[in-house]
Image 1 (cartoon, rainbow, N blue to C red):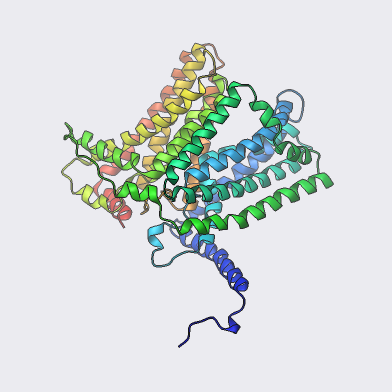
Image 2: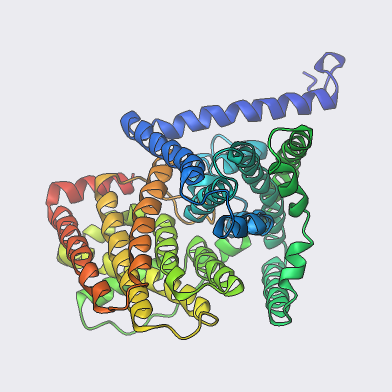
Length: 515
């Protein structure tokens, strides 16, 4: 029978519109599917915590002392255009590193049920808040706008700032899909790396020649801030309408490079999976052998390498350009460590996938397996945070003994906090995921939101504590305060090890991640 389109099938444009509408509906279906993999109580708690922190970050600063006045509040107001531009750059770097955004459903689960690239694009936008840097910068932007304008004028500015967050994320998605498509072309990986190098050299030259502030002052975000700070008015309404228009247009246009990228093979990931690796001499102990295997599974993975670059270099360059003093550097280790844990640490036993069954057949002690996994996670976080701090201290000047002690103590405390939390969550809530893709996440979306919120809250509070201690002349005080934090994290880490050594618990985790 003939299969050609008949006159009753409608126009091609109408068919495309129907396909795009079905793609939008598929997003809801896939979100429901992913949400069903997490217990409803945990979903509700994670969303509630996220909403409460966002509202608190938007409202509480407006009622703090000196909010909306001169001094620090006025300085924040002057920096608002640069803050809006900085969030755009952050969203762009995050989306580019993750290959166009996070996967709503792992690709290996959709082989039999191909998803429209528009669905993939919209799902990646919805999963943007899973990034710890995105969350912190969003809360920081909202809180800065609230404190800068005070209790009488903060609401219009906060609404506009939140809409800008959405628009900036959508714009970044367009460029991210385009860069991912470029990566998949012949010599595309080299081209992307050259573009990144040119961007870094340009930023460094602007900073060295003291022209960076002039460039920031010339950005169009200054016009947006002027329209948002005048209260509810026609100018505010026009500014908000412009931001909403940018968001809508960016969401629609983002589907175009997403479709083009979906037609190309991921060269970087396929090269890793099909590569050859020379055998090395056997290590001297079981733990050393396990560490080598775990280290290879992490450092050879495309999302880990990209994530390391963004997590370490991005905040370091921002702090370098902003010339942050030592008492403000305490926020960096927690930010980087939390982001690194969200790459794979919160579901650390999923690294092997189906190979976890083979791993369990090895004649080694379970405690050795746990020690090796904890060491590799800690190693990854140490390398990422060390690069960030190394860049940040280039312009921070010579620290006092109290400032140096506070930064080092913060570094040690947040690393142990994040590692112990990641391994506890990995035992309590394992998931079967495929971390080979550059866009993979180690847990379902709502679970990742909960992990991001918890890590952001705990590491931020810890960083603020030691930031205050850096202003006290007695440097041993930071060491004394850090001691109970370290002891508590080590105790929880030992409890997590006991849970892994327990055979029924280990069997549940292994069967889950290998499923």
